Structures are given as structure tokens and as C-alpha cells.
Length: 479
Image 1 (cartoon, helix red, strand yellow):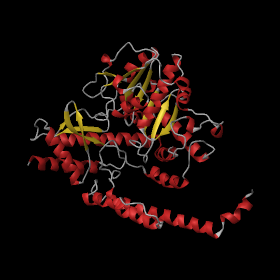
Image 2 (image 1 turned 135 degrees about the horizontal axis):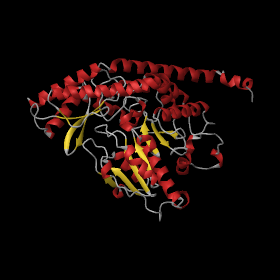
Image 3 (image 1 turned 180 degrees about the vertical axis):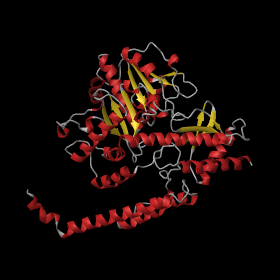
């Protein structure tokens, strides 16, 4: 069939009417999104209780009849928008949640209408091209081996799982055991070694990989949460998986990669690095010394939706040897056979998948190498300013500020010893007050507030205003 043959169908009144309706609806959605953005900076960071309570309007039985999409959009905006967390306006400091880069946000709008399935290049040439370029840029920016293969995932948990699966199958293959054919029953046991401050998502990924969190060996860490090289076992072997960390979730500290990785690999083991946010320190000339030696590992997991400020969801798994990745993730069937150089369904855990590389491509293309470095360095400077302002007022900063994380506790009197109840009360007061938002954590047996400066929109003014609000809440709690 030629293009001429298709013309009547493409220009039929029914087709044109459907297209016009969709264009109008998408345009209206964009208008409402713009209004939301314009107002978000002028509202409390957390939604008020009445907005949360109003969400009950959505909890209803599914009706039998169709409702006009414009009415649905209006309802979604009227009741959904007020109940969001305004986490991309510069004063949300919880959970290491990134904001949204302008170019990436705009690309997400366009890509949403493209609605591409990136499983195979044949399904979307543009998704395949942008994914390939973005993945290569990420490997380059992070200073990882030239031949490493990066693939986008829903988040760092699945990025870590991807790396762990590649490690599991590679280690067993070297021992003569084919997981694809024989499964794990009766397989040689794999020894797993992690730092005692390993993130809980790593333990979840190990469980999902069948390696059992309860069998994991933990290594002592120092006052910053980094693994102590002197406490690391020297008897690892060719059936050992070591998981190290770039960026402790509480302190931002990274493990001593250069002191640990060479020995593990020389003895035949595999090193995976959980670098959900901290791995991006490698993109900064001023900060990459904090992750020196990270490039020596076998695999890495990180996020684009944290420090890189790409919209949710977007993680990145990176494996040094593509064959090791494919051993764990490839699948074969006649209807999905591909001779393409980079079929994404063969490089990750999903078949059908959103074209996640598009937003990362847009962010990196817009900001460039220098812009990414500036983002990392600027947010770290804001974290140091936050810590200085709070310390000057008598709060206790519990660990040195390594990157963009601040860990702080509050006492019942200025300069006094931390009181867990007071710290929790300050956290609750701050969340109610609305100028900023931060959550709680635990550190060395004590309650703490964790401040993560991860949003590209945050300014020094945001930090000063937020610190003032935080200190006012502390004063009110002590009164």
C-alpha cells in the first residue's frame, strides 16, 4: 500500500475529528500543568490535610457509562494537583528525590505522546537511537570503562538487581554451572559480602536474586558509614560477590574502592557498586576523588531520577562486559528475534518498556558535561551551607558532609545532647509548617533528620529560608 492509498483514511472526517479531540485534550493538559507549575512555588511543600482528605472523591465504584475525557482531566487537576508533594521547587529535602530538569521535563511531555515501546529498535528507531546515545554519555560522564554497557531500568533497585543477576550468573558460569539450564537448586554457593551500611534496596535485590539477605556477610564501617578497608576480608574467592557503595544514604560517604576492588577481582570475585546517587560525584572534577577507583568494578547501579534530575522513573544498570549482562537477561523467541546491535529487551529485565533514555538524553544534551558537574557541585555546596547554618544555631551535625546529604539532630536546649523525642518532634513540626520538607532517619543508634539536597532548582536562598523555618520549629518544640 502506498502513501497515496492511505490518504483517504488519514483525512476521513472521523479520523480528523479524533485527532483534533486528542490534540485539544493534550493541549488542555499542558495548560493545566503550566498552571500547576506556576502555583507550586507559592504553596506549602506538603499538601494540606484537607487536600489529602479530598482524595476520597477518587475512591468510588467504576461507573458503567463513559465520561468525557475533559471532565476526567478537570477532576484530576481539581483534586489531584492540590494533593501532590511540591518536590521540584527547591525546598523538598526528603528521600534523595531529585527535581526535574527543564529539558528533561519538556522531553517527557513529547515522549509521552510518542508512547514508544523501546523493547526493540524495530519498534521505535528514535527510542533506540536516543537510548544508545544517552547510555554512552552516562558511561563516559561517570568515567567507567569504554566497553561497558548501560541499560535503563525503572530505578536503582532494579539496576542493582540487574548487576547482581549478571554477577550471579557469571560467577556460576565460571564455576561450570549454567543457571539458565539448571537453575539455582544444587548450584555452588555464592559468598556475598557487603558493608554494614548497605542500603536496604541492595538486600532486597539480593533476595530477589535468590541469594538470601540472611546469608550476607557484613563488614564494619567507619564514622562516616564507609567500609573499613582494614576490616575487609582478604580471603574472597572466585565465588564471591562484593557489593560496595557510592554515596551512603545518610552521610553521602563512599567506600574505599581503590583499596578493595583490585584484590577481589584478582581472586576471581565480582564487585558491584550501588551508586544510586553518589556515583554522580564522578561527573565532577572537584568531587570525583571521593569515588576514586569506582571504575575498577564489574557492574554499577545508579539513578537518573535522583541527582541527574530526570523525571520518574529512570534507573541505570551498567555492566563491564556485555556478555555477562546478556547471559542473565537475554531471551529468545522467533517473533522477537533481532539482528540489531542493541535490542533493549535483551539487555534488561523487561520486554515491553517505556523509552526511558529520551529524558536522560535531553538532560545531558541540554546541560553538557560542565552543566552536570555544576549541578553536582552546586547542590553539595548548598548541603554544606545547610549544615553550617544549623550547626551555628546549636544543632548537632552527626557526620561530615561528604556530598549532598546532611544528617542532623536536635537537643532540648541549645548545644545540648540529642534527644530522640525532640528530633522527631522537630521533623513533624517542619513537615506541618510547610516551608520545606525533610524526613527522619537513624544513625549510630540515634534519631536524626536527613536533609538531601538533590533538586537542581534549589538555591542558597531556599537553603537559608528552609534553615530559618527549621530553627523556628526547633524553638517552638523547646518552648
